[in-house]
Image (cartoon, rainbow, N blue to C red; front, side, top):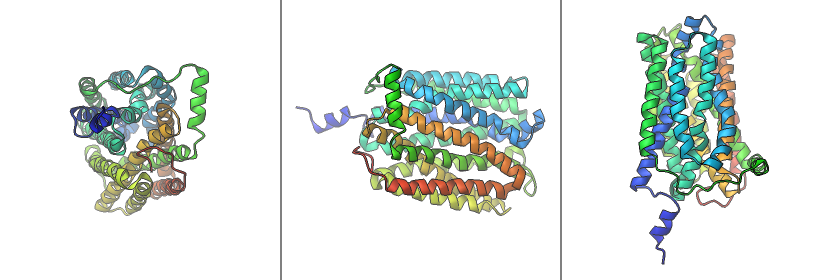
Length: 412
């Protein structure tokens, strides 16, 4: 007779087991690598603008094109992972994106750098396309929201590492060395993932063929709850990236006049996102995702408004609160998508890819709009754009509170 413990183990890795710890360590390292590489140019935008003689709005293309390439590739990577498996795509993505990162450091021109950054976005797609689907399949249902929060916490550390490595190194030795240092960090994390990540045990290949993929895709865009969650990702990250894309220009100019290295230190607020996503995941497991999501929206709105005065401690406090609120929202929403998809008979990989496609589309479009808002209206224009996007996120969160629940153990 099968015991309760054996049945629980058969449903996925339980918290406290060695396998659980290996998965968490590997996915945190993978998140660090992916987002360090993705955002490696953000702290260097003022120097890139000077080096290549482009405007502040044009310099943001080095980030927007990467997120655009990543978002487009997700539409292929997610369904592909449903057929070929999760871990193979994770390893390929991490190694290829770090190698392209080294090539970016050698780019001979602005157009070459943009082309390589676009390619790097395509290479990066393998991890985020499958990470939350892998976690839903391999981890015990009681820990789904918690472990998704831990993974998002790793991405927060990666976002900070990319800026804190590239910014100070770029300030001392130039932007090429800043990008090279970030690429080496990515290679190191790829090695950790190769050694630590357990192979999939509960993955079942999806049906192949165009007809099967179209049927799965139709289901992934027909559920109102999933559609709202996709929009939550796009709007919430757009509000964050609009602020951080233009922050360097504000802090290196009047009245602050900080150096590039000093300005990049504001990204030290990102560990708060790690804490926030972890705690929000635990809160979602305990109180339900519908209860936690609006709290994150409210914190982010207050944070953006606090950055308006030209008083550095208040700006830092606002950035910290914005980071806390955003990662609470993203941590809950990204884990909710594969869980709801599975409950509704939708491919988890495809639903996660659509969420992230919208997420990175929002990052690309609204990140560039943030640069235009800065050029046209200064910091108040950036704050207005970010606040509008957060208000839209809050309205979507309210809509999700009234969306019927599907029968999945960890979805409420």
